[in-house]
Image: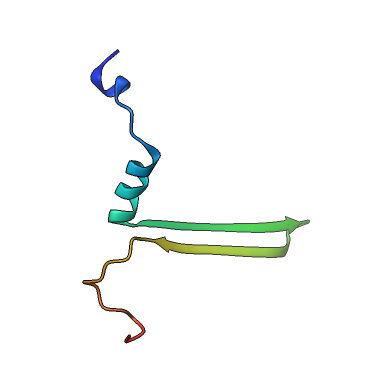
Length: 60
């Protein structure tokens, strides 16, 4: 085993690293029968940590 294979990262540490840089999730789901779109779901999400140095977009 190499050093990389033996290295373990706690879930909390992994989550902290992801939130520090931010994560963008985008997806589209369409339910279609006989080439007729019945349901369409669009997902756009930005997950990031909150920092007091960044001004609020709401002007608080």
